[in-house]
Length: 428
Image 1 (cartoon, helix red, strand yellow):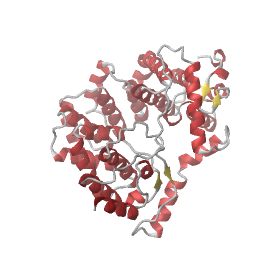
Image 2: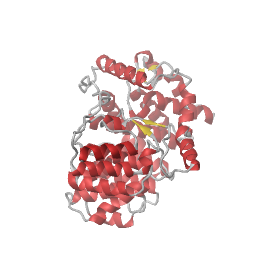
Image 3: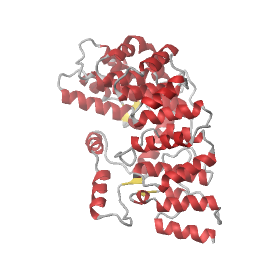
Image 4: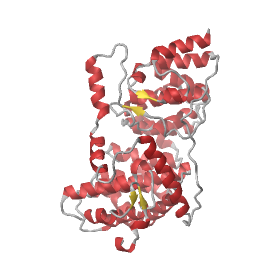
């Protein structure tokens, strides 16, 4: 693909017109590893940040695919390029499933990946590097329904594959296409990777229409917890699949499972998503856009938390290396924006882009993001189930080691002690 044939000035990227994108694409061919890595990171930040697509996303992805076609490509760089293409594929899948406003560019990406599947990505399934194999599987099985022959291949090859990352990618693709079968039960007995087990348990529950034994549910919960050990507060693996599996069990059983899980000590990353889901169930909250749930590195003191623990947590959440690198690179393009102001400007810009690029094959409707800033008004009198759920949340210590507006969104106090008092007053 010749970048000179594209009017990059007219293509919007995350931080404005894509005028710097041709130079970054050219740097992917640089013999200097540092220059290559910086260019790759900046391309990701410009065209698929936070799994959101822009008008510049499809041509940039096509350029990356062209790099993979190059027979002179340094094999050490292939995994990183495949990973970036996988990011585009994942963002496109999310856009199509959720019918987001970036659907037109998702459709273009899906078509491009399909056109390059046989020549570029299928050969990578035999690559000796497991990162390349895992990335190729994620790309080839990114969209449902996938090619039946590829699904047959994944179902068979899963038991021969030694690398856990590749197996997890296979299971994720099979799950997206709803491919059940005898392999699920066998895989549950043999698999050891926690995130793969989450996906397998979801398939097992779906295959049995939600009628599964308690030990199967316990396996799902423990696998979800283990897959997120040591993760950052806002980085939770397997969250959609986990909650999809719970929803198949019915709302009452799901509520009981969440309560029992939150009675046990949990890491903050796991506890917060369990708490959010429990609050949605408890108060029958059906808001769909939860992008405005915010987390803060400001730590809150908790009963029994030692100073050493608090310092470790503060260091852990304040400046992870990804944020440091992100801040350095972002400084090249833009000044720091207030978070709320930046989000509002981005939404307005994306809606404007939708109107500008509405000539795409798929009709894209303008979507106004629903506001979730206002709190839900809780009932004056709590039911026994509501009181139980809130008392369990108040007793989950890890929920009170960070600041979040989650409590405000449900009209609840944001301190454990105040929440207990609040519940008591409304249940007397």
